[in-house]
Length: 119
Image (cartoon, rainbow, N blue to C red; front, side):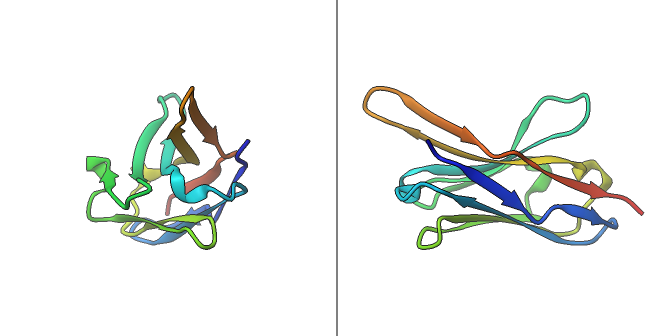
């Protein structure tokens, strides 16, 4: 069982920046694809960015050029640097760890951290 703990959310003005962090409990963290998802009120959860164990990265079109995902396997950490934030980025942001094992999929979520972009 992987435990994920996010931090770094908060209230920021439009155009501002925040960095989200997620620490994983699992010692084999490096084998997981790590992702950031978000869910705004009344909307489904959506992928924001993810980084594979090999370092391949995908971003949602809405955040390309503004957000950067990175990972530090030595610290079991994944980060989301968010810049030029917009009110539409307001949501609860969740850290996700995913990998396919021999017999099953492993899919874990953090508890979420609130990001509010407002003047």
